[in-house]
Image (cartoon, rainbow over all chains, first blue to last red; front, side, top):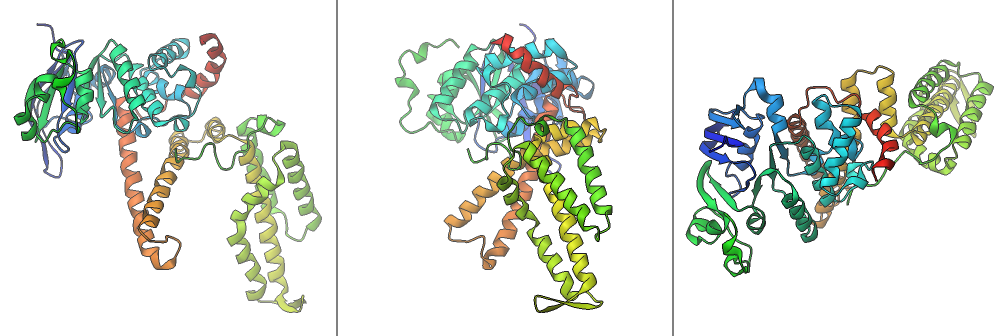
Length: 254
Length: 239
């Protein structure tokens, strides 16, 4: 088997106040996969995400991205390889224009001039925001800001795109547009979400995190149609939503 | 969206004053203020000259006088203080409109009002004709330490976000029958401002994390403003 894009082994983490969030997490994501990371509030999902690019350091265990261990010496390259889109676009967009914001990451890598501009426009076009390049980010709608936030990360040409609650606060149309964009990208995706229909729609595979441990890992459809597992880990489908009634869903590629 | 579009002080236009480089305007403003402050307050005609000069500039910038006039209200508390001076200052008294006031106090009050108003008028004219982002570029060009310029930039960016957040908190308070304006509810107001501070502080930390995640190493890409202006030309080719 090839080297996984994301290789997390025995990861444990306790916050300085002694509150332990992760207890030996194992997670492998291979190239081209789209994986959903599911779990109730407080399961440790965000803590796990912050380990993937070395913002938090492991108390025990290891994280490697395409074979490169996440440690201080590699941080620059790790942060290029792992692109995190945070939940609140206002936290991610802080420059005067959309263009400058998208250029922030590659400029930190030392890219300049024409090449930088070409990369920026390519990323904006991927999320359909090319014509907003010179607008200030805080004048855009929430859905547009979320898409620009995705572009700020795509522009780094990451090996894995990590999305924290990508569908939160989006209206149904923006939610679908974002799904179309994510499907069109040729990149490995790890998606942290509570939005189970969204996970089912986009991610063939899901991993369930509960109380800092991986408690299930399998086909999204199989997990969502296992009522006992769902109940045990505080996962609930929205009212009226039954994966089994979606035509052809059972035959999705694993 | 709750955040107001544009900035509250800037008045969009294309006059000579709008187009002048920001760092020149900054230096001129500071020099002008220093000259005004060091002018002896007895030189009444000189102050009239300053006022005419400023009014001329405002006319040149085509910013409506009313636009600047309304914003000059920010000076009011300061003016109230100046009005008190003639009544409480010592020295020989004179009678003005039937009131006995201190003569040196009167002169001091005039000095405060004249210099203060000229300063506010000049600053507002600068603010109305200069985009906030250009002010930052100007400061950077004047070799203001980069960290300070960065902090000011973030302040500009998050001013709307934080004030919209405060607006929502006020709405929530009103919806629960509390009037933030009434002194009876000031303790609640103070506590919610405390909460706002904590929330802004935590947002600051999240922004910093998001910056680190994109390879921030303490300096904003210095080229970015130039990239943006250069790219505006290239954008036509792109579409």
